[in-house]
Amino acid sequence: MKGTKKERNYVDVFSDYGLDERQRSASSNIGFRCFRELYIVTLIITILWYAADCFVDAEIPVVVVVGSYFAAAIVCYCVYAVRAAKAGVINGITAFSFSTLNLASAVFTAFIALVFGLSAAGVLSISDKTTDAVVIAVFSAMLSTENFVLFFCGRKNKKVLDDQNKEEDE
Image (cartoon, rainbow, N blue to C red; front, side, top):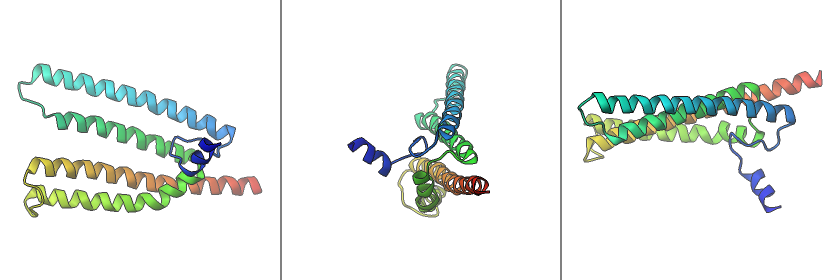
């Protein structure tokens, strides 16, 4: 019983809480395709980093490698969210959360990216190390982009569900 209450109060883009059988099936199919794409992308990135390590004498910073995997995960997550929103299979609680909270998160992380980007450019002196400022700026920009995508996915999902409800009423 306790788990059910938690499920209703906290859901995410992968949750099937409140979805009917058709929506659950569509969500599972989309999720399977996106997981397969994430696997292929990480496989390709790993091969490319290994090849770069074998054939390039330069030292590759770990933060660049980590950033590439982080970007791949964000892209695959956003691809899932876009496909799920087009199909209308994001549950209502998550869609509401995306269409409200993610806008504030997107603006905040965009502001952080701007501040640290200006710091890396030398306009502001927030960080002593330029590398740290660049890394924080890039990662914040990636998170901001993800939050903007999720915001628009929440709105798109609500629109699709509203259109489906209109069709059912007619």
